[in-house]
Length: 452
Image 1 (cartoon, rainbow, N blue to C red):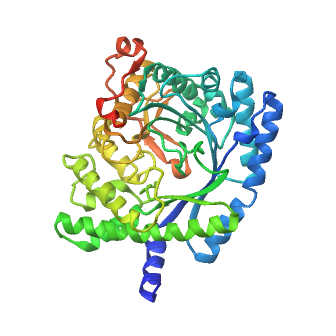
Image 2: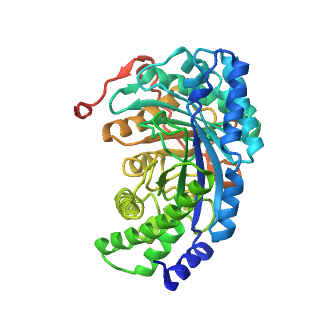
Image 3: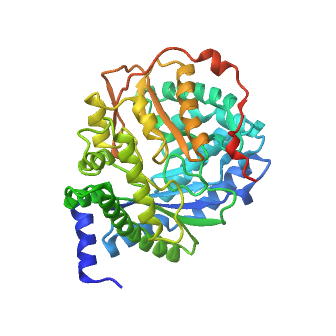
């Protein structure tokens, strides 16, 4: 039962500490849209999405106004398109991407995710055809997001797929070169991808999901940072308890919104993703949380330990607040979307190698990182392979959203606007892993994958 103190505390979180519902995402199955005729398939896909999510935006706006809780994004995720497209031509897949954009325009949503393929153990003709047009799809649409799962702990790492993604990312950067290579900001390469993630660009509707479902992503880095600040110089055990209690309160807000949205949209409530997702706004930064914990600057020695503690405490507090927690759930560290991360990179305190170490203990991985536009495909593949290996070895989701900004070099920056923020170009090691990448094949699954 709510009391006046709880209500006033929540109002304070919203007004002063940037608490928001980052997204209401409706997942929609397209498995019943399959057709061998590409035009018929596109018609079915458009009709299914627009019919099912017809009231999504209005419902989100109504809840926002009635409860006074900001809901930043209303999104749709769909069945991985390679699963419904089958062996249609690359041109057919590109037409499907345009169909997704047309549906997004009709609905008025922020993003639509699911122009995706799952190739962790191998690639079908449909997978290859879809991947071949990802750069064009991202260049010719505004709201369509794409993801490719190239590895899992059970299957190992598909290095042929990683090699293909290196060239795909480079082409996406070139085709969107007039807009700071923004196409790459809508493309994620995954290991152990979750099927119920509401966050873009990696969201898709998994094959084990119902016909439609409501998933909600909450966010509140500013709330956590403020709680740590108020806690003062307590010991780390006490600090973990403060973070857990704060995560509980944040997640309860998400639970309320998710349940209400599901009821109004006549769709099952899926999961709450309790990730701390930052924004470029001052006071809404995961990096600043780590600094409130006692680090002089994010990226210094001790950063990985502080992030591990934060991630664990957030999950422990969140799971007590909802019976259905899923997605990614934890702390995100997207460089361009986090004011504190940007400052740490510009100060020289945060390197790609340190970010890679941090991804071993947080959600997602190397996210929204801009690198020189002349970075070779092989180096990009090496970065992906390193990050994906962390996920496979640790039985966790990791991902790479890398932006080789065309025509830019170290010392420059790229700006995407909105939640995508501004990314300083980070330096890389340029020694080539080309011979290693060219071997191809599949890196076998780790021994601890044999749990049956």
